[in-house]
Amino acid sequence: MIDQTLILLLAIPLVALVAIIAGGPARNIALMASVGNFGIALVTSIVWTQVAAPEQLGAFEQIVLAKPQITLALGLPDAMAVIMMLLTTLVTIAAVLAGKCPEGRERLWFSSVLLISLGALGAFLSTDLFFFYAFHELALIPTFLMIGMLGKGDRKAAAWKITIYLAFGSIVLLAGLLWLVAATDSPSLLFKDILAGQVDSGDQIGIAALLLVGFGVLVSLFPFHSWAAPAYASAPTPVAMLHAGVLKKFGLYGLLRLFPLVPEGMQHWLVALVVLLLGNILWVGMVTINQKRLDSMLANSSVMHMGYVFLAIAALIAAGSTDANNIALPAAVVLMFGHGVSIALLFALSDRIESKTGSLRMEELGGLAKSAPGLAFLFGLAGMASIGLPGLANFAGEAAVFLSGFKNWDAGQPLGAVQIATIIAIFGVVISAIYMLRAVRNIFHAAPVKLTESAEDLNMSEKIPALILAAALLVVGLYPNILFNLFNPTVEAVEPEVSLVEAP
Figure 1: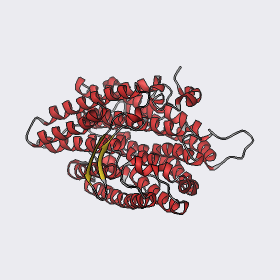
Figure 2: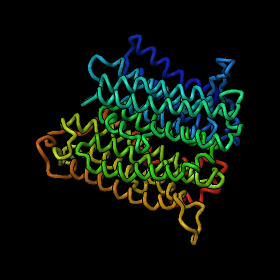
Figure 3: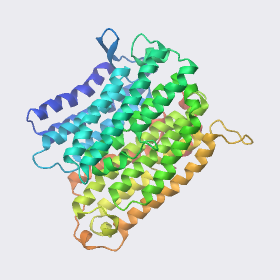
Figure 4: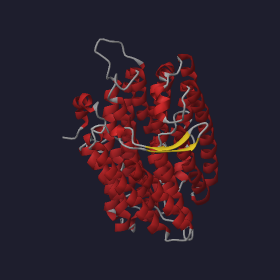
């Protein structure tokens, strides 16, 4: 059953894409495809949890090239793949419903949304290294085109910048992946064959460096981050939602997936990674505080919060394996989910603010809560999730990240690089609170101005995508073990500590 449903998850958006290009009603087709995919993903996830050894579930494999052996292979090998599948299909529904498509560009708009979603799903479901890489590259093509053709502001410069940066990252990553495959002497490009191999410690250092730089550029790791903020601020709303919320997680997913092959190499670069992730949290955090436009603030905040996921990865690297630190991996993945949902919701609501007031400059807005209370409530909820308010999804992930930093540390021991970084990273919570609370105050609770006095509240069609994402933040925030418990069989060991992040 699983192998058939995984094929369906890719076939549905592909068929919908063809139907849209052929002239069908673009929005309706995209909506039906996205809702259908989420339903299939949800049922598949439930089935996955009911099986004693879910990694043994049937997966789809079809050899497409004999030498070198390349296989179109899809599977759900672990909880990380399941959660990324759910995140992708959930955000896709909201992305289809969000934003305003320019008249006459419906086919380009909705086909691009489906193609980005298809690429992200394909990457997260692929258990073959070639298609893992290829699906991500496929998703980048409509991302570049949509920013350059239908974006706003300095869209062409932003499109060129993201294209150049991510092309560089992809090339570096490809070099690292090729070296990795050669070093393992794997008979195929299937993850199970590659992960069964071993890499000499001498090769691990070079491979780890290439993987960290390649994946790091794609995730906007400091100092390779400067493409992200202008790209998201210029991108059409669905593209910003899907890339910042979903596709950027590809790099984090890849590091977590391939780390077991190069643990010694990753440990060689641990201090450097800690310094860079603190750059995301502190440097980019300060840049975020300095932003005057809401879209730029949200774009920079997305870059900043990647530092916390890298902190969990650093904790895992320092431990050497998921057995030695069984909190780090779940913490990283749950935070990836929470961040993906909250930033997608914030970008969707930011678009509605600009549509209703004509501006995103925070000093030009004020008192919007009086004329648009529904918009104010939903933005406040998403903003509080973003800064880690208890009871919302991001808090569970962030708290677990901080716990993972001290997992193997005992009182009386000297602080290591990860522990020092964890202590410093807590200050990032203060930075997040400053820029987000200031934005909420200036836009919604300051004295009303001319632009906001006559602004209309969200109508039902605008509320639906926001409510879908808000519900996900609340469900995971109030009961985070709905995701943490997917990480069996290690969950029994994790649960006593993870329970600290549950809402009362």
